[in-house]
Length: 387
Image (cartoon, rainbow, N blue to C red; front, side, top):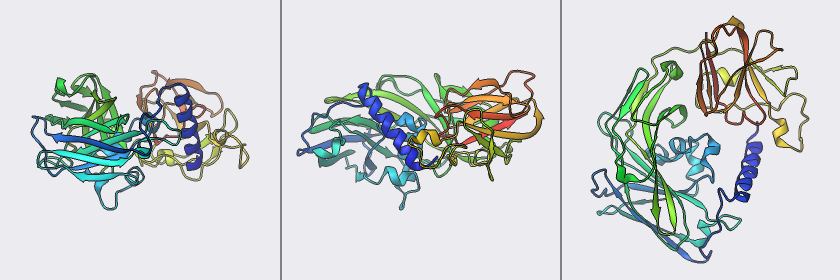
């Protein structure tokens, strides 16, 4: 799928959300006004954090469109403050402003009213993020990101506190201290594994401060692991959606590559004949890289509907019959189907989250496994299969 096709689909979906009054609200700020966005950085105990780098940047209207990984990949931590910042940080920070917090932890940004409005006159989504230095046992310090829409010329976000829990992760288990209740309303956490460059590797949602996962999902990767808490807050004329990320620790997957690593794959449009790809990005082991598919077979170049040019399925050929014990799909809420002959398909499961570890039914014998569905492959990163 081309980047222009993805952009087209994101724009259409964003407009649809606006029509439903889900993502968009008319701006109350005069485009010619001067807007001040202020606040202060605080450590977990409430003490001021002086000299911290604070970033103000626009964010996607619907971060879920990027697989729920916008925060870890684009905004939290000092990896995005490198000079030059790595992709995808560079595009996210292109319109960003950076200031240092004062001796009392205070910070302020000044911008024109037109900068807090979208092209359509709606209130624009913005984010303020900051990070602390890494502790001796960490590779990245705690970070905080507050997301909001500006509806007043003087917006005081109040204190942005860091969450600094004791945190450990090893061999398929992780645990951490709970987030203080006064950080805001809401509950739940997310354990995140990323590469050192901020690319997503694996994520696990948790309703408590303990979580278990199949260690095979980390394969032979390595990078950083952290936990994030998401809470709701209030500010004058708006609400805030705040993510608190713990210290990032180093991790090594410790496992081996799955048997599907390097296996060939093909693409299909509907149930048409599969077209083999010269190389398979869906099994190449780059767990954080989105697959760049060619146009779907049977769709002419320059099709009026960009979605029509996207393949519906990617098919992995294991080379012979297997009884899969685990199928891992990254970056795609996709249907997962299996076949012995590549023609007759049966349902295995549906990946209902952007990272899904699926245990197929017992005695499932397949040679081919395909993932997809109409318009579902835009964020696919990797398909991993274990017998």
